[in-house]
Each structure stands twice: as structure tokens, then as C-alpha cells.
Amino acid sequence: MAWVLLIGAALLEVVWATALGRSEGFTRPWPTTIGIVGAVASFVLLTIAMRDLPVGTAYAVWVGLGAVGVVLLGIIVSGESASPLRLACLALIVVGVVGLKLA
Image 1 (tube, rainbow, N blue to C red):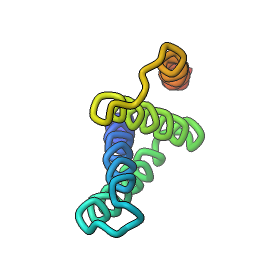
Image 2 (image 1 turned 90 degrees about the vertical axis):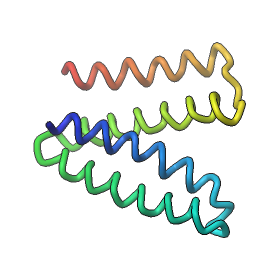
Image 3 (image 1 turned 180 degrees about the horizontal axis):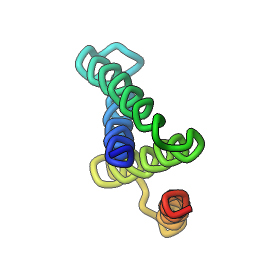
């Protein structure tokens, strides 16, 4: 169950990071609200997952999956670069996250 909560926290990290990026410095109310609510929910799920998972592993997985998700969303939705080097770096993050899960 802890891993499910951690993945949910990482998905919410994608939501809040993307929303805050679109808030234009907290000047747009809806993206700001979504960002803040998403961040709080993400932290809550992360904290609950840390009851059963090592702190270092949980945090690294949360950050790694969140970062990969934000970059992929940027590529898909915002037309950001999908260069081979950028995708290879994302793959390395995923390999690291999987490694932490298996270790």
C-alpha cells in the first residue's frame, strides 16, 4: 500500500509543479489554487508512505517520478524538446527509481 501512496504522491507532484508553472508567479488564481492543493495532498501522501518505506528511498522515488512526469508532460503538452539526450537522461532516472524499488 505504501508504494501505491507514493506513486499517487508522485502523480500529484506532476499536477502541482505543472500548475505552479502556469500560475505566472501566483497571479492566476486557478493554477495557483490547484498547485497549492496538489502540493499539500502530495506531501500528505508522501508522509504516509514514509511510515513504511525508508525516507531516502521514498523521497528519491517521489522526486524522480515527479520530475520525469513533469518533463514528459512538457514534451507532450507544451512542445518542449524531446531530444535523444534528454530522453536518455529521463530513462536513467527511471532506471534509478526501479533500482531503488528492487533494492
